[in-house]
Image 1 (tube, rainbow, N blue to C red):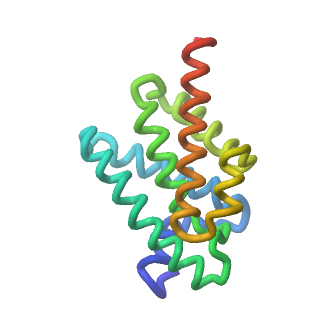
Image 2 (image 1 turned 30 degrees about the vertical axis):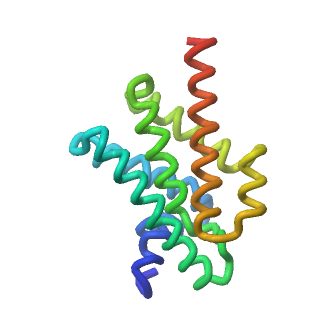
Image 3 (image 1 turned 90 degrees about the vertical axis):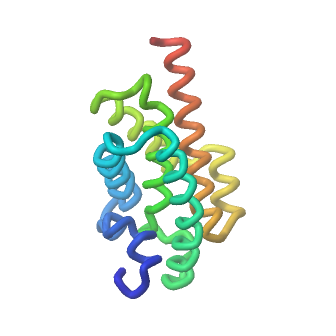
Length: 155
């Protein structure tokens, strides 16, 4: 993990090294980082942070995947971290309590683990660092769509 800075980032500061459900641990690390950073970041700063984290993450995930010999290795969790930041940031006006944020995390993990179309297509066809990052961004958008449907029809 410490052999290259890309590995430290792609492996989610170690959260991706969990022996079981590393993607979930990466998502929980993302949630923790979101809660930690949010009081200090304005809206425009969040937008820039998420965009920069995506770009740098595509590079880090590609380097780490090549180093591990598996481009989308399960321990690579930076994609989950950035995606849950996007979900929590966009949903923060309607889902701000810890319980509501946990619901956002659970819905995101369901989409990320099950990979319904179109997530599965991107996961299967884009085999590089950008693809590793992008399928989780699609899962984040599907999470946000599901949350919007919930707000519109059920709340």
